[in-house]
Structure formats: C-alpha cells, structure tokens
Length: 474
Image (cartoon, rainbow, N blue to C red):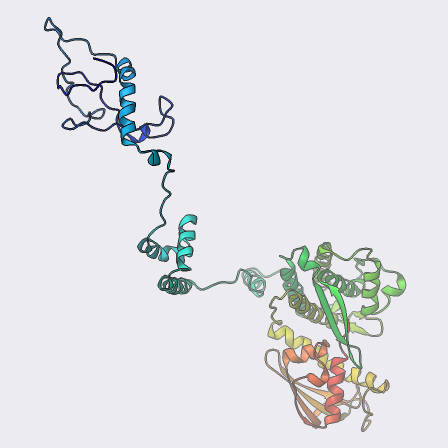
C-alpha cells in the first residue's frame, strides 16, 4: 500500500486511534511542541474511548499461521500516517479560518447586567463586572433608574457615621473614670474650662498635615474704634496661644517656652506675640504643637498641685492684671475663639464650649465691662457719666440678658466701676445670644452688627456694646 493512499474501510485493518480531545491536549505547545487539532471521526466508526473507559482491547490482526501479530509501534505508525492526516486536516480548514484571530469574549447580556445591579449597589462586584455594569448604565435608562433606587436603598441600611471623634468624648471618659476612682489631686473647677478647650483644640490639630498647618488664618479683633485684622497661619496661631499662655506660666514660676527679650516679656499679649513672630527665622511649622501641648499640660498640673490658694495669684497682662482663676478663664476663652478661627480656615465645624464653661466666660466679660467702660470714657470714646455716686452705692445700670446655653442675667454699672448695679436703677435692657455675645467680646462681630434686642437708653446701650467689643485683642 502506497504511503498517503486511502486506507480501505476494513474492520480487520489495524488503525491508529485518534488523539483524545482533552483540555490539556488543547493547550498551545503540547507534547510535540505544536498546536493540537483533533482529527474527524470516520463514518460508522466512533472515536476511540478515552483512557480509563474500562473497555477490553480489540483483538489484533492474525498472521498466516493463525497467531496474533504483534501490534505495530504507535510512534512509527504515527510517523507513517502523518502526511495523509495533514492532507485530511487541510481539506477541513479554510484559508480564512486558518488566519483569523480567536474570537473575543462578547459583553454580558442585558439580563446578566440587570441581575448584577444589586451586587453593584452593595459594592460587591469584581472590577470587570463593575466596569461592565457602569458602562451599561450609561446606555440603558431603565437600569440606570433601578441602580439609583438600589443605591439609595443601600444608604438606608446603615446610617452614615462621622469618622471624627465626638469633642465631648474625652470629658465623658474622664467623668466615668473619676466616678469609679476619684483623682487624688483633681483639677480645680476654675481651671477645668482651659483644660477642656486645650484638649478640644489639640484634637482638632491631631490629623493636620503640612498643608493644613500652613493654611492662612485671619485673626480679627476690635482696637477700640474700628475692626482690626492680622493674617498668619495655623502654626502662627498656636505660637500666639503658646506665647500668651506663657504669661500665666511665668506667674506660676515656670520657664518661658520661647525666650524673649526683657522688654517684650514684660509687655502685653500683642507685643509678646509680635516679638515671637519676629524672632522666628522661618515661618512656624507643625513642630510648634508639641511645646504648646507640653506647656498646657504643665499649667494644668501646676495649678492642680498648687491648691486653692493659687486662685488669687495675680497674672500680669502688661497694662492690667487678672487673678489666676480669671486668667485661666481668659485663656480658655481665647483658646476656643482661635480654635474656631483655625476650623474656619480649614473648613471644619467647631462647636462652642459646654454650657457651664460658656457661662463662666460670659461672667468674666460682664465683670470686666464696668472698668472697660470707664477706661473708654477717660479716653473720650464713651459718653460722660450722668451722675457720680460714692463707692458701694447703687447707680445707673444696664440689664444684660444672655439667652441660650450658658446664659443668665447681669447688671452692668454705667457711671462708675465702684458703683453697685441694681435692677431698681436699670435704664436700659440688652438681650443677646450667648455665643453671639462671646463673638462680640472677641471682636468677631462689630457693635453695630450685634443682633441685640435693645430697650431703653440708646446711648448707654451703645457704650456697653462698644465696651464689650473693646475686650478683644490679638
């Protein structure tokens, strides 16, 4: 029989089984290094069984003496049949099919993509599925509407929670701890507002990066006659707070965190801050936070160990002095106000102090108002006194009503700081919100813009509102 001629269709003719069509045989670069193409089955003769099928082997050919001939070597038979098999395969493969690339996977159908909308809304799809769904949503309006409804429904499954800590968390934790085991040396009540406001500001600064520390901050105050402002950075504000806190620290015998020349050290808060800013060779950075934190902690520890006798210790502010307990309230007030300035600069919400602490700050401002009004009168910035009275005697008064959290009523002596204010001698009535009054005292609201309910002597009301704004400083 010539090599390459057709093999007669005889069941007794030995044949080479066609290769098995299995997954591992279809991979490129098989055992013989080529791509496997399974041969067609001949009519009337099913393909060979796969390995392990359990069939008995077919009997081999018989030679002339009746003995079974030895089976031919499969490898040599494969070599002999290769040219014919190649021609047989060539007849079934067209030129276009041989050169065409493998077909690409078709995109999922509309039904499949619609079934994935629920998983997509829960963000449970794979990257490929997410891309396919989102591409489909740009083309299919019904699916887009369904996706929006599912996404809204997912939002109702769990309420969004802020990742920021509650500003009152520290106070609640301390209250719980102290309730179980009281502190051996508690913080004095008059120092608690400063302790709370310093802790809240420190929590605000905790996650600031370099960009936030260099964010511009506009400090505002009222210089006695008109609004004033100064631009600095978040780091510059912390340096200002640290420098003014040092006035309390030196009164307690502590060291200055930033050495200043004697003239600047004896001056008031504004001059000390300007000297500190000038002494810094480069703009302040986030490194200022650590010395400010250490100084605030040291102040709290020192006044706690000093006991009640330290409350009346005088703290010099240059042109005036305050008892230590009032100075700590003043530092708490400024810490809150400047923390609000920083929060505004970085577009972050910041709540006012607790009601009890806010009440103490308002009470301090109300107690200082008569002396401030007298100073403005001596400078020609307020109307003259209507009637002088002896010290300790009742005189003309203004009723200051503070509404909201931390509110209450105070009577302000109008003609002399030594006079006694009383309801019987009230000639005017002013009503203000507590936070609004504090912003007025901080110079963040002008006296003309203060949202006040006013009744009575307009001149006395104007004098008191301008005196409240004059309490502010850098």
